[in-house]
Length: 368
Image (cartoon, rainbow, N blue to C red; front, side):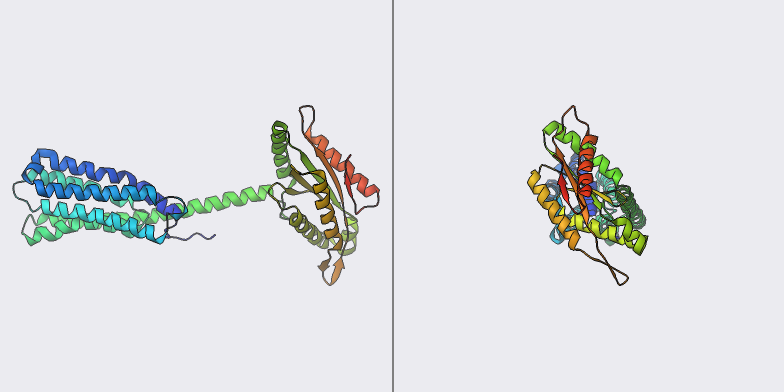
């Protein structure tokens, strides 16, 4: 899936949720400190009570929304995004109005100073927290200082401070833009690195011609499954197969035709053995190997016979030429124990395949 820049997917919304979560607790704590310091709440009780109740309400709302709705695959739904953004803007607006009104008060220098310092700190922290979404980051800080920027000149109070706050807001906006760009560049690099890692892993596991598993990966899975069944006492089945008269295809039609036939056979095998418990790999040359477990012998034989018939009836159209041949199969099953090496199972399946070839090819032989 192509990487989409500036798209509010689950990953980005989850980042926003985590980065902003701690701030939910800071608003009520900082509010209480500002209102309690120097006895401000005693002189302005009603205003202080209204402010702290609003802060507690929006903080509690955001906390519940984070835990109940912002989780799982639903985190980036339209309603959740709107609710999240609205709650953030409402938090900023409540604080901004409180900050603006405090700055209009007379004879409250200590509270003004603490409120100003808190606003700058919370605003700056919000810019950093919301950097994954550029406009949320910019507007959060702007809304927080905008009421004071408007009210202070209107009431002719300390005209220098609103100018400085405008400069501060612009500076924070630039930080938001730059930080957002760096965030998405990092996300894009991470996505590219993940895809590259997956491609490298796939190449290391896959036969490049047939696009099924290669011998190396088969050996790893076989070793894992053997040890698993050694502990659990389950049965492992190996099916060795070989294309009959494959050398004639290469000699008569060329190696490119042989490659196309190998691709066709790989698709036919995976169309029959397509369960999660089935592992299909190219064992080498025109040989394929199938690894499965926990199936009854009769069921495995039936599936293999179905595959043999399917290959027998399949025709490859190659440059106006119809190429057709058959395939032989050797099956072996075993329940692993401490005294048995997994190479023995491969040997049993190989012996069964040899017997199928010896009996005239185009056969399924079960090792007994």
